[in-house]
Amino acid sequence: MYLKGSKWSMNRRRKRPNWFRIALLSLLVVAGAYVNRFIIPTQPQFGVPTPTVTRSPESFVTEAEEYFAQGKLIPAIEAYKQAIAASPENPAVYVALARTQVFAGQYKDAQVSAESAILLNNNNSNAHAVRAWALDFLGESLEAEASIKRALELDPNNALAHAYYSEILVDAFYSGSGIVDAIEKAIEESKVALALAPDTLESHRARGYVLEATGNYEEAIREYEAAIAINTNIADLHLSLGRNYRTLGIYDKAVEEFTRANALNPEDPTPDQLISRTYATIGEYAKAMQYAESAVTDNPASASLRGNLGVMYYRNSYWTEAIAELGYVVNGGVTEDGHQIEAVTLVPNDSRTAEYYSTYGLALSRLGECSEALNVARAILTRIPADELSAENANAIIDRCQQNLDSPPEPTATPLEADSTPTEIPAAEAETPTPAAP
Image (tube, rainbow, N blue to C red):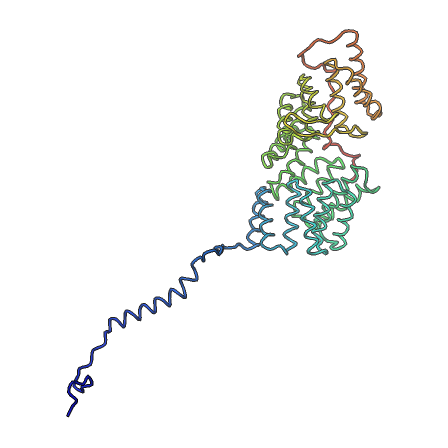
């Protein structure tokens, strides 16, 4: 018996499952789970910055060291700054940055970097040492000496500190602010530095600097060459080597070293100025003027460079141009391109400034501008009466102005007479104290 019309008939056939649909749905579920877990997390979210790959501080330091070895000091400085940005708590990187900044001539920045290292670790001997070195270049000899002594208190065997101390002592001697036996102490410190670290360029540089200061130029050359052998791409070392060649009268090699320094650091006016002075020493005034102009182009706000250019104009018989440039040294003023220049005071034992004043007065007297010329002559005789060369030039100014009263001069473009040309004064960089036993 069965219920007619019932949907529950026991004889109804069951439907077969759709395996294709089941498989497709399963694949869609698996695919959705994969996308949700592995794909979506890698996609940038709206309004959220995309993460970038970060470099390790060590990689920046390695890059900076490579730049330094190549003599590329500015890129090296930037790489060290990037290392600090990535890891600002490592005092050693600040010290390395400060050392590089000194070689690049960024002395104030070097002081700041070294002091940052000291803030992180007040007992870091190298930080105090490099700070002292930077302060020495800034002319802060007393503070530099205090800082270098602190470095040696923390580590008596710090070769860099001994090397820097020897340079600080020599500079203090030059400035007259050093201890009585500064040169003897400098000699001792340079020897200690070389004994502790014979393979560092700072040790050889310091030893060369002391030998140069004591008049032992040939030995100084050997030490500077040893430093260059360690790193041939540091402009400062070539400048030092060139100075000693120049002092010995080996002018071709001096110019060669200054030129190398200029190639390594073309923005520094010092090589151009030294090349200018070297050519003037051997009477090649046209070349001397050319390099003096290049130096002013590098640093148009420098009174000293303007003064050197004025001297070279004078030696090439460009009186008007000489007066314009030397006037910035004596009177100060604003240049045509808008650079403010402060006047330089005439003081004893400053042969370079004395040369600028003397040449200014001589140029004025040649053009009959005797009112100003006589003021310059009086200033020379009043302020530096013991300077025989300057006094001789001052008297020549007075004599010429007296002659001008009797017979006013006419414009002339003839070369300078030998007896009226200021005698070449050795560059301040080459002046040394009485030689002492090294």
